[in-house]
Image (cartoon, rainbow, N blue to C red; front, side, top):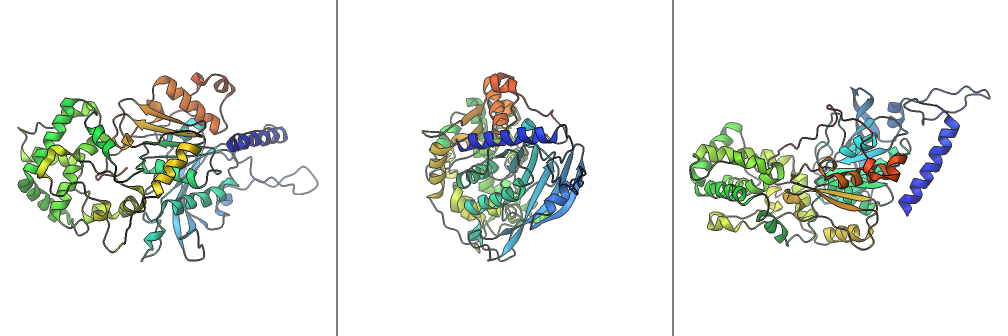
Amino acid sequence: MRKALRWLLSLVLVIGAVGAAGAATAADRSADHRTATSTTKTKPAKDIKDRVLAIPGMSLIEEKPYDGYRFFVLNYTQPIDHRHPGKGTFQQRVTLLHKDTSRPTVFFTGGYNVSTNPSRSEPTQIVDGNQVSMEYRYFTPSRPAEPADWSKLDIWQGASDQHRIFTALKKIYPGNWLATGGSKGGMTATYFERYYPRDMDGVVAYVTPNDVVNDEDSAYDRFFTQVGTEECRDRLDAVQREALIRREPLEEKYAAWAAESGSTFTTVGTLDKAYEAVVLDYVWAFWQYSLVADCASIPVADTASDQQIYDSIDAISGFSAYTDQGLEQYTPYYYQAGTQLGSPDITQPYLGDLSRYGYQPPRNFVPRSIPMSFDPKVMPDVDNWVRHHADHMLYVYGQNDPWGSERYRFGHGARDSYVFTAPGANHGANVAGLVADEKAKATARILDWAGVAPAAVQSDESKAKPLSAFDAGLDQRKLEREPGLRP
């Protein structure tokens, strides 16, 4: 009801604005137009950059041109601790893809670093809107000065970062707002809605893991016995086994590469631990980033050379993942996984005694100088809230994506909220990949929540389609393979 009432109020305001403004079409027609004298003359509208930079704590890093938009890379001063804002601040990286202050705005979070190049998330294209993107706290450079207090890296603090950014920019962008993100970004959007449910008019979360009970991971084990085809599963398992059988000669290759590249293993402890972690990620990484059709590229373990096995593991899992250099950028993620988010622990029984360490916990991937303790109450709280209080929330999963094994679901009390699965899709699943009726439903709901659903769509959801044409420069959504087991 709250969102419906806000939508109705927004509609009344828009109707009033249209009646007052007539045929005004300037990109910033919602900017202040104050009467200079008793005549009809008005002051020129402030440039959007000036309006944004007038926000206390907002500063410009650079502006990059893009046809039809203004794109700004910004810093925003945030409290290290939102409960005690007087105890220090840090600079958080934010980007703004500005189209028009009369358009809806999409708040995109990747959950990691933010790209400083112009791009649009799928909901931004669908609603033809503006996009605000936020770098998650403690990812460099959005980190307090060292020595950082890592206890202030939690999901409530991250949601509070978003709330402050939204509150500051809502005055400039008064239309409807949607939160979106994929994987850890979808988790971030979910937590934002959990703690600040009155901010957004809708949430579109992609391939979003939901590890409710950290020690219960049987859903992942079931997934890996069913995904794809039996032939593909057997082929992957055989390469993984062979990599552990041939551990000694393949670790020699790994050590030679590490020496040449200057890679070290202080955080994880030993090259052997890093090697096995990469090998154990192999099957998971394949299904996260690949499709059934890619099984043909997997070598036949029995006849493959050492180099072929090594190259396949490296191409799919990435031997750089658990080096100190590979872990450094992602320390905030592993810290969160080991303190609140949880992490998968699959059994892989076909490896038997070949595995010396099993799936290693996040604690192994965070420097020992950073204290960690896991809070088992946080994720059940979020899950319970989503099940029973979700309002205008959409989750999209990929059928063959392991991260969707533990997913969000809706129960009693959820309203106008949906979970859809894209057939055959991996971790890059999106609305465009859904079956026709679900694609139309999802697109129609996104348009409606953003307050821009055409009359034809309101009467017939099958007519729903993005309001903005595909832009090759902004809308490339190719799933980039990254080493390491991360959402």
